[in-house]
Amino acid sequence: MHQIQWQDRFNIGVDAIDEAHRKLFSIVQKIMELYVEQHKNKFACVEGIKYFKSYALKHFTEEEAYMREIGYSGYLAHKRAHDRMRRETLPALERELYSTNFSAEAVQQFIGVCTGWLTGHIMIEDRAITGKIVSELTLPAPDDELSLIRAVILCPLQEILGIPIQYLGHFSAQDTISDAQYYELTYLDQWGSKLQFILIIGEQPLIQAAGLMFGIELNAINEITRFAVQEIAQSLIHRAAACFGEEPNAYRLVEDHFLKAAECSQEFREHPPQYSLLFSAEQTCFVLCINQVPAA
Image (cartoon, rainbow, N blue to C red; front, side, top):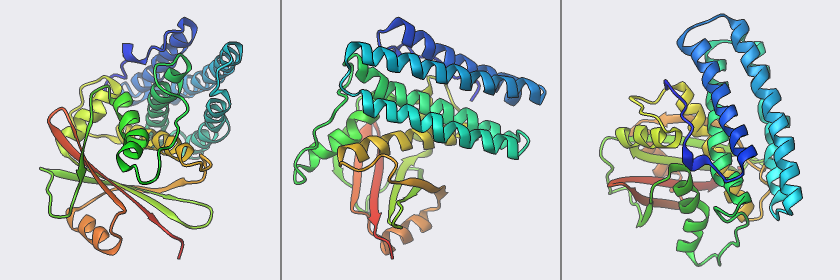
């Protein structure tokens, strides 16, 4: 990932907020240029990360004041998202940076998580402030599966990618995806129940989708991109949890990795997913499998 590009579609229409978002993107980009690409000394990276944190916290305070001023109905949920970043995500990233003496992987994680968080948060939460997307979703009836899929998965993904996505129906083990990659995310709640997601997508479409998210041209999925995609997945899960009345922090990520085809087949046999959903986007198909595994 050579550049983290600001995209006009990130604008929400409030000058002060849009300017702050552009600034945050530029800070992350500068950190990457100094440490990842130019291999400058650690001091430059430390100062950049401190600046990102202080500027982000200042921006959250100002954005929250704006939401209160206009009487935004989604204020409390939005503030909770800021609080997770303030109190959990940024402190955890800082601990990892200092405990590893600012290792390359820890810096890549910081860049990836912050980029993914900014992208998902702006497109899903911030654009709702000015009505560009619906902030409060009314969950359809449980038997209205298509509306559920549209509310929880389809609409947020379309916002993040900026392209139309169509739900094609259910995916079966007999169906095939050309040159498929299998990416699994496993979340755990406090009672030991698992929530598993498996994304099945061709290698090139996966690279193209990641590039669309960040407005760049990618040749491969690297560590920064992986952390960013992981963070965006977390944003989508928080939104889905809110739809179903779950506490947004009910699930925490415990594992993510790419599976081999044989491992995915075994996973399907042992734990057939409750949902295997087939989508298309710009002449490319991909599958999202979702499975909730009760605690043993």
